[in-house]
Length: 82
Image (cartoon, helix red, strand yellow):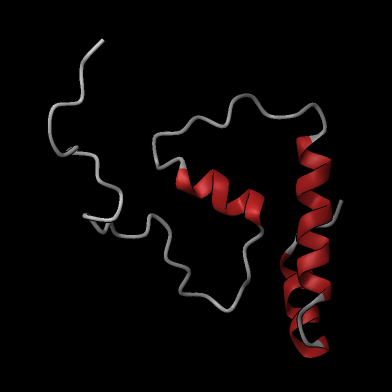
């Protein structure tokens, strides 16, 4: 164990660090999203969930429904028929 002999080099008020995440969009991130982004580019999310493709499709559908009606039609027409 080291003894504290003099001023600490880890003085929290002495240094000002840059923010890890700078949101330059119109979207508001949740605390969970900021926590994930703060982990950095090398953070591994792990394996995909079992139903990841269904979740992706539902998220895409939700995103399209938020578009103006005239843009919704152009997005839906670009998808292949299934």
